[in-house]
Image (cartoon, rainbow, N blue to C red; front, side):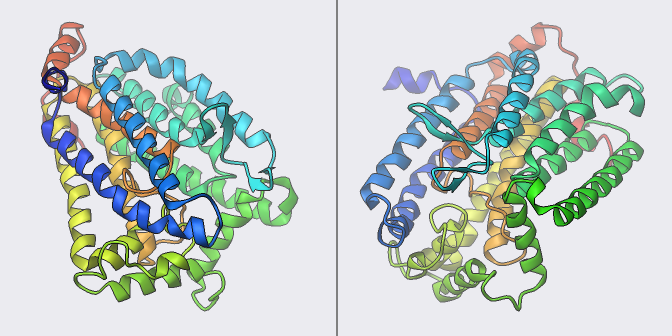
Length: 398
């Protein structure tokens, strides 16, 4: 055991936060999974808890393995992985709308693994790829024409392949790419043009989906109805999940009802995944909800510290590119529970029950920890990767 801990490198605070979040997740997942057992009729609470434990063990194995990889290796890996991701996204979208009666436009079935969501993998791979491109052109004068094929074409393909089935993930990826480009020094005037183009393309897509509903997978109807329901709160049937989530939060009070004593978990769909934050607040109160949010904000702080401490442009952009989406996703999940955002279907990282999302979060954390490893940082520096002022990446555009 002592030798194991000696082999753990990188930022100890990040290791601690991730471990605490993972350990805490067992309580709400075990509690909320009763909805799957007694309402949906799927398995047992212990079975869901055991599955969650196995997924987390595998996730920490991913963190441990990835954090041993020198950061500059991900430059080449992103070039190899991006075409694979595009093929997976295309296959997922083309396989049909249902498998065994369930929506399959976001998932592919892998033997011995089960359902796998390629969009989560695509998000991490694309952010690594964008970080590579931005670090490559950092000291050059960038023109929009020259960046269309190497930068925006892959971004466009990934977003377009995800959008019909999963609007929220596509929107998060697009937003995070824009943010990373801003931090990486990409000209703001070009970013404004990209945003405008994106809005126009999305508008055309929505109009086409409304004009020809059968042309697109049935997930389009789902996310469009969620947006319409958010703008029309009088539609109580469409807002059933939000209403139950708000009831859970309201009845939780300051200190909560206690672990496992949630009532709304029996009525709230996706209570162990998309809406687990509402169950946490009901059981642990406002105090528990705020403390959990502070953990994510502390993780954000440590991510920025690691980015500032990195000695290469690529490492800085890599850490921010894979780290910021974790915090962004967590805040969106919390915002949905209190009706600040329409229902998105985004899990609470490291807490919610789920496989692919947890693994990709662990992959991102492993990359961050690898970048915080001083030994690997020195190796990357010796590989003649360009250096820069540690504070430049966060202040370059301000």
